Amino acid sequence: MSNFPTGWFYIECPNRQGQVLTVSDMSMQPSVRVELRPKKIGGHPHQLWCYHQGFLVNKHSGCVLGVEKDKIKDQCVFQSKRLVQGEKKQAWEYVNSKLVLRHGDIEYALNDLQVPKMTMEDQGCVYLLNAPY
Image (cartoon, helix red, strand yellow):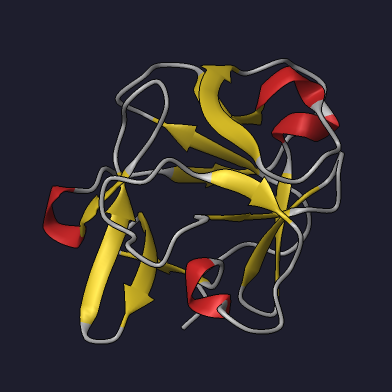
């Protein structure tokens, strides 16, 4: 299921006014944490994402959003190289305005901490997907 917009977009947390998912330190390296930071006007590439074949891809680095360990609950999200195996840690859905990873029959969603973590889907927070222009 894909309810993601086409093209580049911000992933904004309305619980944290004006904050969007941002690759920390504008890094292009994999295994860098993704945090909620104030949105920079004009479409800064380290804050822009697109949806491609189940993956959320960062414009600046070309890396994808995901978790690093098989135990998804309570993990922070990172930008990573796209995996051929273990894609369950990187394959996103947008369900009821939440960013969701599925692990078998269990759904996990992103919460609204400054450094967002994965939680049970019913405890996840709403995220808005907004074009930069």
